[in-house]
Amino acid sequence: MISALIDLNRADDDGLVAQLTSQLRSLIATGRLGKGRALPSSRRLASDLGISRNTVTYAFEQLAAEGYLAASHGRRPVVTVEGGANGDGMGAAVSGARSAKPRLAPWASQLTRADWPMSYQAPLKPLRPGHGDAREFPNEIWARCLRRSAVRAARRELGPVNRTRLCEVLAHYLATSRGVRATADQILILPSAQAALTLIAVSLIAPGDEVWVEDPGYPGAAAAFRASGARVTGMKLDEQGMQRMPGAAAPKLVFMTPSHQHPTGRLMSLARRTEFLRSSRPGKTWIVEDDYDGEFHYDSRPVPALQGLDGHGRVFYVGTFSKAMTSDIRLGYLVVPPALVGTLEVAQRHIGLIASSNIQEALAEFIADGHFLAHLRRVRRLYHARRDHLVEGLQRHLGEVLTTEVPSGGIQLVARLKRGRADQAAVKRLAEAGVVTRALSSLALGKPRDHGLLLGFAAWRENEISAALRTMAACF
Image 1 (spheres, rainbow, N blue to C red):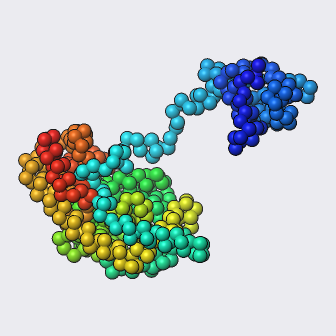
Image 2 (cartoon, one colour):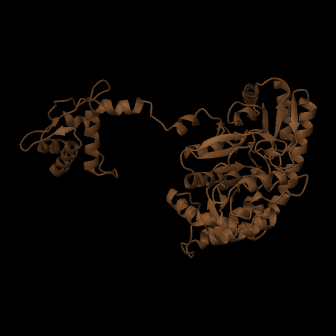
Image 3 (spheres, helix red, strand yellow):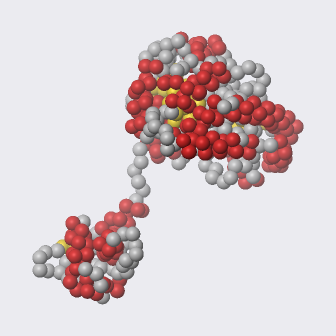
């Protein structure tokens, strides 16, 4: 009896019609009710199940509309498809859809072969790059800001997606600390710096447009621009950072990290910055300046942002709070050239790259009340000491194997292999021993020219760095 195969739960949130329809559909799709099988009449099945006849009738009508049953007046419904894993009906179609390899866009098909984002899902371990120390963050102060923001939420007007107060305090902070020239209405608040790159790409890049990026450089930038169909060209580095291609026509967009090149930490000279600005045609070539860890300078005064040198509205300025605060803040920001503010605001809402208004309001208070600057002053001293501790340890324990490049700021550094090109094998070997690093060659756009290790120091206390260095020495 079919009724013995059906189990209806009258307390379930799904109604009886939905339950009966789903269970009959499953019995057909799996082959337990084969093609040509006549089902009981609606009156008989309703009696067997102890439910109303209308419930059964509605279920039969739905399955007939979906093509599972053939029903006609005065006749019992008949199964019309062959179910089961080996049949050629809907059950087989569902099974085939699950097992067939999906066809992906060229950009998406490359993601599983890339070493970005970093594939490590385990808890953070020394010396994973790209992170500050969340243990040093003033969580109690931040929690008070969040609580006050949540309490005020009921009284707040809906307002803009980019909260005015945060944009105002951020504009003031960027002007005084980084030399950025922007009004509050030029600032968009986004879920991350990567979201900012995505927004720029979908708003400006047409298929076939040329984009220059640093090589080696930040893989997320190339990924964002390739997704919009750009022809991405890697530009070589020298001691001053990114180089221009001699004699080449200006591209549609240039992406760079001039204040602390990712990953080498090199500082782009004023002459090189001026050269890029001079060769960028207003309204034709755009520059994206990613200042991902611009808060951290140790050996000299911070160099003002490239955006502040631009007198023609050609430079986007991208920043994030995940390095200076904690990675789970999930807030970035984008300073937009005046001519594009309206376009990118609409694009931001259309794509849905919108940050929580509660977190935005809490962050505005955190900055305005001086907590952000106080936190930065404290962790700058800590990270400076940790950088020096790592550099000294690398020279003492691994000086015969690695050459260390000492950055003037930031939260990570590069240690190049003196012999061989097996940096990815070294990364794997170190990970198995409990030390997480990143291969410099994995950050190359094309054929790697550099081989070494990218090592984080900001997130790790000096005793943790020392233990990691002893492990590294044993692995080499």
